[in-house]
Image 1 (cartoon, chains in turn brown, green, red):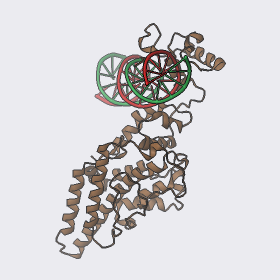
Image 2 (image 1 turned 120 degrees about the vertical axis):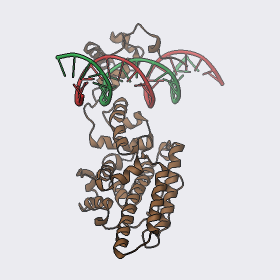
Image 3 (image 1 turned 180 degrees about the horizontal axis):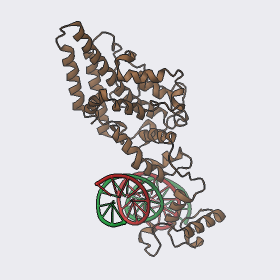
Image 4 (image 1 turned 180 degrees about the vertical axis):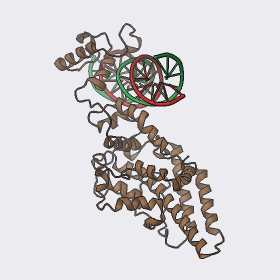
Length: 335
DNA sequence: AAGCGACCCAACCGCTGTGAG
DNA sequence: ACTCACAGCGGTTGGGTCGCT
């Protein structure tokens, strides 16, 4: 392996760049360009290696570098792209004019990563950090609740309400996971998603509908068709899928789920309609209350531009998790 | 005000990809 | 086919800054 000249050129200066060095580098590149980074420092009168000059120019001195805080839109794009591309910072940076891979990488590690972790989402897999055993416990709880002795109409109502609430919560988890595993594979690098928040994506979250690309037949790149997926993440997905299958039976034939579709056993893209019916009324579920708030705004396209409190996946999660009524419930699932 | 730890980010390091010879 | 040199990428580091005690 050929080592970088910088690694053994100890006579060359390292560390932070001085304003004088910056000026020299800018002046030279503006006059002569940067076709040969190796030769550039000597020609520009800099005691730096070419690699260092290149990095300084690309990450800081380039005139089109955008400085300052990342916007919410940029953050959203980064998350969407990262969910499909992984730590391909350079490719992500291609979609954010003026932002460098280094800057995006730093922003991810210092801000987004923490944010995702706080929300109970694994920043590597973009899936909720779920211990399958918790889901088993939940399944058992639901089964026990359903098989409990119903002593009175009031008791029956309370049980039904609890079940409906939990069903709605589970459906949100399901929609999130489905969306993360479907939408990101089919829509990333598609301008309809990157340019602004995708209304379909949010509808999928709140309604349980599956994103499809019927309006956007843009070809899927090879990377997106075969995204990097860790075996561990895949297993977790299957576990949840299986669990959901068991929950379907548990909720009975009263119309809560009658379609019979099941999750794909892998990261295959589901193109059929969502097997789940519409959620129950908003008054009975904290989840559907979120849905209700948003849908009441009318045109789904409004979700993206008005900055409503539930306009992103993150915010939907945050709202849900922050709700005192169900915080303990989510802690069980997400912690 | 001082000490300390957490955080941020520019820069470095080491590796891979690629093209020329 | 092979070697070499360079560009580019992603992970990591360390110095500066900030906030808390």
